[in-house]
Length: 222
Image: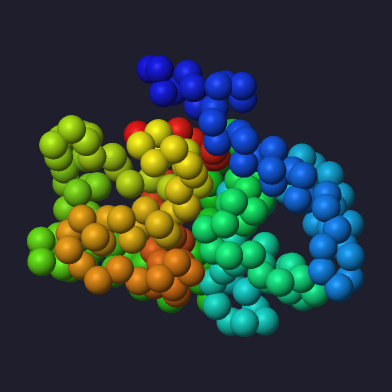
């Protein structure tokens, strides 16, 4: 209850510091074009409302699924002529939290039809695939054993609607792909890098599993 209360308060939620940073960067010109995100998208509280509910999305130019962080860097490169932000930098995490945070309360509703279907199916297969020395899949923990304890940790249902989440243990926000890496390490499997296509596919599958859940970014978790 204490963590829920912290999450629901914009004052007490420590992740809101990155939301504020993201808001500053949204309006800050950068790159050769000296453009800001707001030059194209105007006020994020209006233009970004509901956007996060449908990510990851299929990008017709690259013919790949892209998540929110990849879309931000794509826009920086194409329209601002700015350098991409490092995958887990405060700046990129802040912008991601800011964009997603403007969809708080909106139910997740990703599209898995058409060209996104193959990515969804690959994500589902990875979710159910056993791996690592522990020979465990995502489903073994988050479907079959949720609510049980592993040492002091209660296994969750593995939902993604709060990411990036502020980790009380790490005292910083954690992006979803970092959570995938941490889980792979726990089952002693070789993790993939942040931004890997397999992780984006898994991200789409988790979004589909969580369809109807309200976006909580920035959520607070242990």
